Image 1 (cartoon, helix red, strand yellow):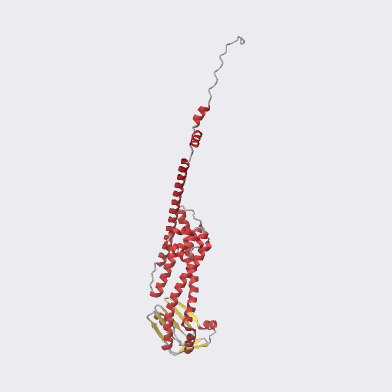
Image 2 (cartoon, rainbow, N blue to C red; image 1 turned 90 degrees about the vertical axis):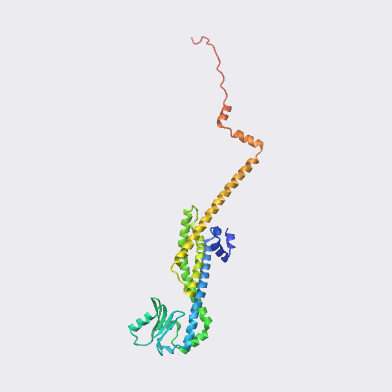
Length: 337
């Protein structure tokens, strides 16, 4: 069995997992390491596709921002961990629903700062003199320029230097860097998330097999559960692609994601039970045929001997029982007197 499973390629496994539930029995006896390897590969495939789409989306924004930097953004300078713009900025891009605000005045009031926060409805960034604030919905993350300077070793920067740095790296270099950063972070997140789903579905598969009166070890339940998750993982990948390209979102996707996996587990177990019942019926038929063949191949002598051996005990006892000898009729000789 294990030798046959080693011949099943990665994409063939995906095909079996999605469209051939009757072949799930192929995965029952294989090593757990094979299922774990498939898990890491299917998550990597998911991560690469999502990373490519996210990188494409981010690069569109960066390209548009680069043109804005060249042609419209006012001059700025960074020195002594302090940023200064020649004039304040309040820009909005409708295509990406992105806000960019810059106010490096030293006398910035809290009321003005709150107005900037309220102005950003979805996603945006606010450049202040000592830090940049990234806002997405109600979430805010502050990046101090001093931390950036310590990590990059950058002490001074202005508009012309930034344009020159971008030109030297090139858009392709920026895209590769962003892609590598994204797939690293996405892969770790997806590994943790999908592995937790795998464990939960494995327990469900073990219990479902017991309910269906199938003796399935936890190892076998663990093996088939990752394959039951395959279609959900693929749909998750397509959902993420649609989200980044079109903004499509549904709050019920997570429920559908898990429901599909549970349905696959139950369907696979029921098919296994059906196959088991068919095998038992076939074994019964084979035994009946063998009995008939054995009866037909018997010789007359064997049949006669078996008849003799199968005689009822009562008949044997009657045959073996011998009549008692008749008592001797003697006359008294008078000795008893």
